[in-house]
Image (cartoon, rainbow, N blue to C red; front, side):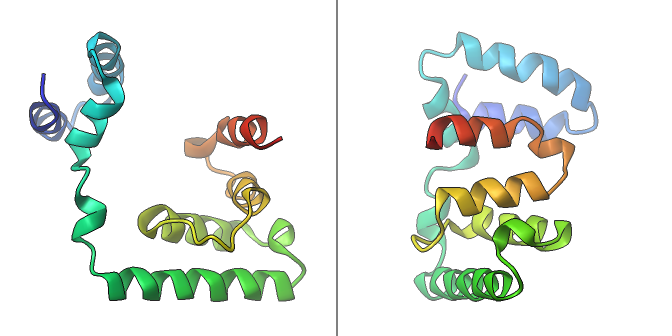
Length: 128
């Protein structure tokens, strides 16, 4: 299966999430290059299509947001909504170099979202 085919399959079965949760991981296990399949599926050139000015503006917003959190007691002490919002921003536009691994780890832990469950411990294992 090619990336485009996988994307079509996922889009056509969005109403049946349970089916996708069973079949997509199995398909990835069968793929000779699963990471390449995922990149092809999401369109590995999506980042290149983004205008540099927009990406730069998003970086400046993320840095300003981080500075505000630090001035209010630190990233580790920020609230759940700030954590989720900043994670979505850096997830969509990239993590600025100014952010430490610990900053990202703290944001994930503060997000209190089931979607991020276990992700924080994986980051911790890779950082320390």
